Image 1 (tube, rainbow, N blue to C red):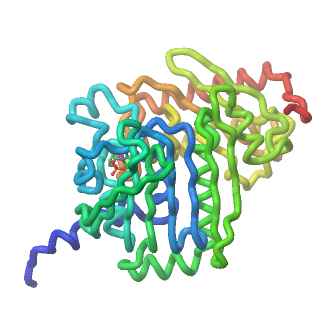
Image 2: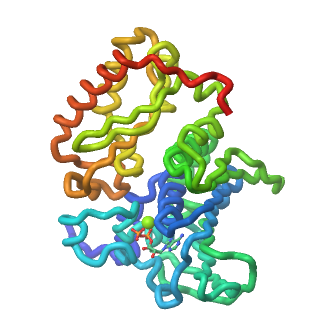
Length: 351
Ligand code: ADP
Ligand code: MG
């Protein structure tokens, strides 16, 4: 057996494949960057269900010219300055690993970023990066953009197995990614989101949108996404102790079909998380009050960052919570209490 050194660009491609695994991870990383940039408005456009192009435009703070060369280099981030910040203070931004942009460069045919800070307005700069995340060229474009637009073309063109798999399951992957975006549409009521798909004839279709603004609520967003009927029977959940649970949950008489889990959203500090244990608890408690259904749930757990480690997997969807078991039991008891007391129902014709 001969041991050889893998070239830097191959290593880059291998590790990038763990951050960007599918359409979900592309839109997730781009939208999280837009949220971290303090945006009030975020547009997501798929072309041909994401196969040809995924484009995210925001009105956030933009990228400073001093950072143009660094944006797509691996482990370059503007959100974290040292490890102490991560381990002791914790991070309140969705990103901090400085991996997404660099990984996108590695798996896409091209990555083009157009950005404009308030200081540069109206002179935006269009930046193009190569597969290693090195800035290839830049040009000034004068236009109405205030914020950042990122275009990811032809993802997985250089990873034939993933590409084939994506083409084969395109619609399914597309719907999975749009469903994942619902996490952000629902939990960030202050942001105005719009999702489009442009079909192969170049026609742009609006898929979904939320109003945004300081007066919009999570319930308004649920109605925008699922319609008035989709929010029927939801009651506010607001439990505050050493930690805080808030959001909406179905009342005990009007839930979802047993098998559907697509309207169950869990967040820790507004970060979408996968926490099967907590979902299981919620469904179990609900079923002790309603034997035939599962609830719709939007639950945000507010926790001090010192009890939280989000740096478990590259996609940061699995979080480690200190006292995870204890919180699970608190959740179980509080929900049982909640349903025993719950009688208020939001009227069907609320607008
Ligand atoms: P991370 O989000 O972990 O910092 P990324 O690779 O996702 O790493 O992004 C690298 C850097 O690029 C960010 O830290 C940020 O400075 C900049 N950036 C990326 N997208 C945007 C955006 N939409 N608006 C402003 N800055 C951005
Ligand atoms: Mg990021």
